[in-house]
Length: 347
Image (cartoon, rainbow, N blue to C red):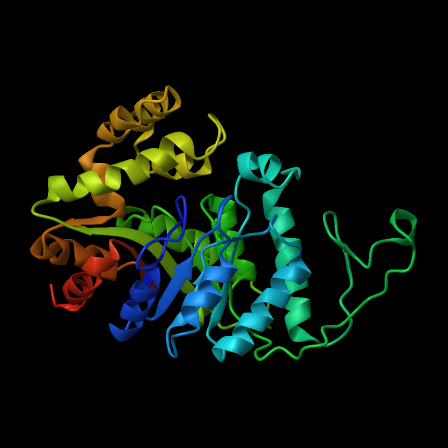
């Protein structure tokens, strides 16, 4: 199981020490570093800026929102970053949720799976560069039909030859059908709130997608599962868990509308529906402290690694037996050397 480093979201501005953290991750032998976007900083610019001083580590977006840019614009950014990085870019895509898509991008949010499927198909056309890009889908049409525009649109092929026609595309997915679709059409899956307890179910869903996989895609044995995992070193399990509780409370209670929170749905399937009811109630009432306090320790331990070095080493074997190929560490960058040592040492 490889290690990656997730730089996370920006708050009011650039995270202090981010460049040093990225360089440190490369020096520590991490396989990849990943950025995020919501409705503030974008995922591509920081990756290019910070990644410019690296030479080996892979550079991924976790995730670039499909509503933020058209499929061809995403493909342009991907092939550009891949050239500039010498073939180290990974395009991680996700549909986001209706609050962001409709509130920030001013776009409707129908059928996210079907829309994602069309999006990936167009990106792959651009990267293959076998012919001018054409697509006649429910959500994307290239060129735009004459009766919907000036009639002057024409099918175009990228002027730039992609460095890799098979540049990897990963999908963020939380629902069962979306997870299966990732295995069907993508080169990797970016799960949030992965739990070793759910590994059997996740493998079944991936297998469903692999059974429908087109023969021209990357081999199934090369498929990646890059799971974001909070890792907190502390004096004991309970105090370390306190650092993760606000993160869980945000996603369970504040990310997405009530009744339309895909992140919370994952935690419900883990068996924490009652706890999530309480977390969400506190969060929506504005009491974030009580929302965080309502996160059970068992939930933290299900989806994170917390405690002393010895605690983390004791929890690690459960993860090593899963489908996860890369543990995407979400942590205080100052603790990365100790975390790398803990995760690589024999349990």
